[in-house]
Length: 74
Image (cartoon, rainbow, N blue to C red):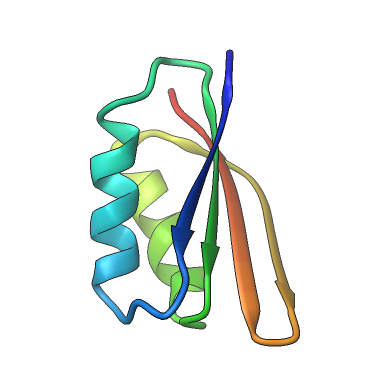
């Protein structure tokens, strides 16, 4: 397992989800990806994408205009 970070700041829907999808394609099962965003829509969009594609959301947090989703590639 390895940890990765995706900077999706200043991107608007649907680009954070598309960039997350593209990054996940390069990862191995068990890898953890932290997606850092400024678009509040990702708090619903990326977890929904994870459910559809079978990945696990480990954590979501929002702090002062920054939104972070941590997911595990399954």
